[in-house]
Amino acid sequence: MINIFDLNEANTVIQRINNIKPDATPLWGKMSVDQMLAHCNVAYEMALEDKHPKPSGFKKWMLKLFVKPIVVGNKPYKRNSRTAPEFVITDEKNFELEKVRLINYILKTIELGETYFDNRESHSFGKLTKTEWNAMFYKHLDHHLSQFGV
Image (cartoon, rainbow, N blue to C red; front, side, top):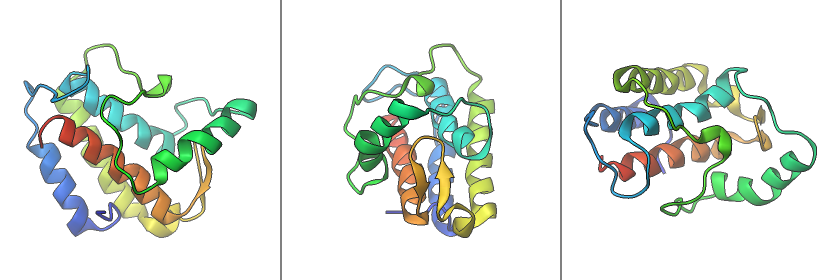
């Protein structure tokens, strides 16, 4: 798995993002390419900004128990998997703006470094190791970039 905290390896992902065309169509799923980019940005918003309400109580317990192993594990995501409501993007987005935002989030992640993320509290899953943060960031990006053939 690519280490999203390493600039050289992350540049591979950034190059894939730069290869996406505004008229790209998905190989599976319902999102448009601009919605997909906005959808990928949500993971970084949750990690780096205080934009989304945090789950608590029973919902957080369920996320940690059932969703966390899927999100931070080594297995790739299945096609057409359900997504959390916070990640559902239904309106049209500005392709270029979302693309730039995503690249900037990746660069910010590299700037902060894996030490910053190691044992840091995640939005939904409690504390994660740097390996789990890497898996969460990279797997999600790889899944959706592959969805659009890049």
